[in-house]
Amino acid sequence: MTDPITDSIATVVATGALPARPAELLALIDAAAVKLAETSLSPETEPDLLAHTQTAERIRRRWDGVSSRLLVEVSDRNAHRTAGYLKPHQYLSQGLRLGTREAGRRLRMAETIGEFSNFQGETLPPRKPATAAAVAAGTVGAEHALVISAVLAKVPGCISPEVKARAEAELAEAAVGLNP
View 1 (tube, one colour):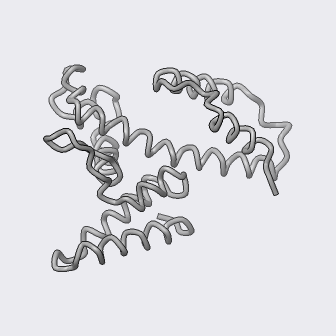
View 2 (tube, one colour):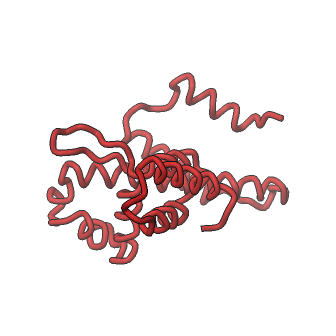
């Protein structure tokens, strides 16, 4: 069964009808969020409300990935220094007023799924590629990713990278159907 709303969104994305620049996309998302906050949900049926809640959660989970990508760029380019902060953590906790705990959580998330650059300017793959893909798809969120990372941190160093990669992929796949 097809969903006309999802199909129309896929068409808009496929045809390139959305803006290409990050600033324009962010303005569009911000405007949509403002409009949605002003829109009455009263006329919606219960099944529609449940579907909307699932869509909103998928968007939030994808946004965890977008937020991590932005943080990676801020870190790689030292943009936090342009804003007057010595470290990305300070920028998040003080500049964005997230507080220390949330700033640390977001940094750990970015370290888990982000594509950082090395000293030669080459983009490195995410430390947890299957988890990064699941976050990008909106099937798992930040808490899932952080739990996966914490579990894998307990794997002994003598275990081969291949086995660790397989374990990460299996954990990411399992996380789709589990609570963090």
